[in-house]
Image (cartoon, helix red, strand yellow):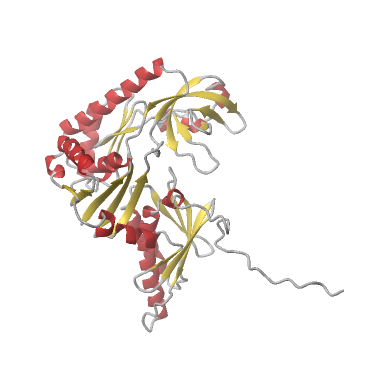
Length: 419
């Protein structure tokens, strides 16, 4: 059973995704907080750094955005030169350039931008200059993948790129064409506005969190979408009905006495998942520590004593931890490098089984996540695409007393020196 629970209050929106009543994804957006990834700007090149093959571009944010040479060269692999030209041959200071935000500003770093534009629709992702067709690998049927690829090749104009999304499986060509025409028209509007705008200028803004989740996650596999704002709920029903009358019938306005996040145990599960120490059902636990460069997760048996076979006990704990780690990375939106110190296993088969279980659990994550493998020290290395601020950073702040270490200096008594 899959559910989407939406809580709206004072201009803020919080969206929770539940699978079998277990919290798997959570997004929050305040009245002044809008996602930058996907937004298109007319920027002005501030300076070019030949030594780094990169440039800084003013797009109107607090910090200048970072543009790397790979994000200027053609998106299609066949068109990328074998030897990259100097970036100073491609752009110059003072030049106006159309760009799209690829990564949110994080910490002291500004946003990362690209000239490889992509506009996501309901069924497709439209790329005006990519010149290729791709089909989601999560569509299992090879026959269906071939059918969708043939449709996309027929629909696209020369030079255009199209990626068929997972939710497009079994959709008709007419539905895909309607989606493409909307995205194509949106892009043409962006280009027209860019010709009249002085840099820096925002030309296209990604939709809000509710609209994005409905677009990307509200499929026929979702049993219900519950929202506690009657006004926004009615607007949502009308918009979804344009896509699917059946999906519109699955939207329900919540009118219960207790808050919707309490009724569906969203708040309770979120508080438990955000802690440094997360308990497993068996009695084992995880310890999650984040640094600027990576995240480290330690697996412990804790209260779980298991059976008379120590190896079986260890494997059971590690298997449960693997599934929970996949859920927590997705829920807390932790990106970058992740190192997991599973409990030592003597069996190579068990190690392979844990790696396979991680990959299987990652397949449910809409963000690209890979189990790279075991290091020489016996740690599992994981990478997860990092495009925006994690839930830890958006919902928590560094403690002013300990400075983020989690420890406070012990006050020791001092004694006067003897004369």
